[in-house]
Image 1 (cartoon, one colour):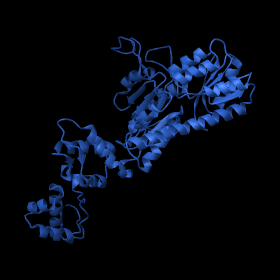
Image 2 (image 1 turned 180 degrees about the horizontal axis):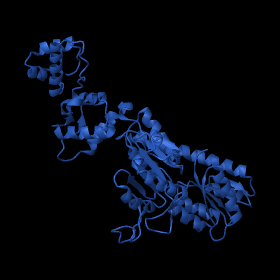
Image 3 (image 1 turned 30 degrees about the vertical axis):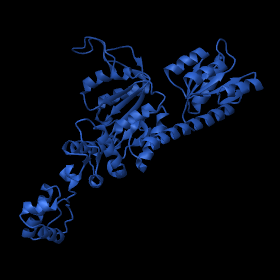
Image 4 (image 1 turned 90 degrees about the horizontal axis):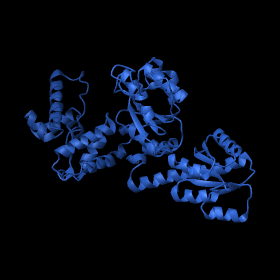
Length: 450
């Protein structure tokens, strides 16, 4: 069943509560409004997917509310309810853009069926919109770049999880774009109009982190002269992203767990808790399960966070995306003092063969460095760092080779490294002819260099 936010609008409190309870039990996020005016205020504050509204209400009826929603909240669909159904009302409602029309009294099963069909249609519409945008621009949600199978799966999970209120744990190696994933989840959620607040869990000491997160009152500690709201309070109804959450101390983990469980913020030195309504996203490059076993991460907090999990793929698993990434980095560096407009196939081949232990972040750094070195108009293989352009093999075992041959072999490999893989230059460094070098490479089974 797709997740969706449903706003129930009816001047009868019993009807509102009955529908809201049934929808929440079925897994939807549900809110209520007693009038059309209140519904419009709530939609302005926090967008919703579906409005379930009575037609007959004082001041602003359901048809007037439908007109206002179609004009100002076009992404929101409307199902109308009435106790006095007529053919004329049904035709008018559908003409104005209502998705469906349901007659009171209705069975809860009928309500859930109609809301479910609409929620499924909306979810498919969102996924298709993102797919179309990706095909048009080459970018995924949040401007992410890549069309490989691992990235397609990543995009699918981002869209799925964005519509759900539960915490999301984003795992992956450093440099794989975990914060980009978190921002994409936020931008595709119903909280997208509210703040996105990133927290670097490894940047501050435990004492400073507590003040940054929860805020403090005057006199809470030495130097605390004024009241200060923390990062959690500043998020409001938005999203808090804990980057590298595995770096939090056990003490801070306990305080965060209490906040998540109680949905309350307790500032340092304060005695009045504040409501906490933001969604939690967290990222880590650590194995939190192993950290739990080692006593370095709380098991109860791990289970709170490990509800919806997304893994960001390392670059070596999506090598087909390297050309698009490289070109995007070149485009981002374009300027009047930069002669580079593209990259050669030889340079792309070298980039695609490298292992990229630092992932996309390392790729960007190497491309920016190559742009600074290049004479343009293309980044050439010679502009790349030696470890990338040379593709020279690491030193292999030499136990079975005589000492003299081992020394010669090592000298050849070091010359190739020094020359960036250029065989002619390596031959000059060694003081031998290139034909001799080629023979030695063949004799020793070395295939590096150009």
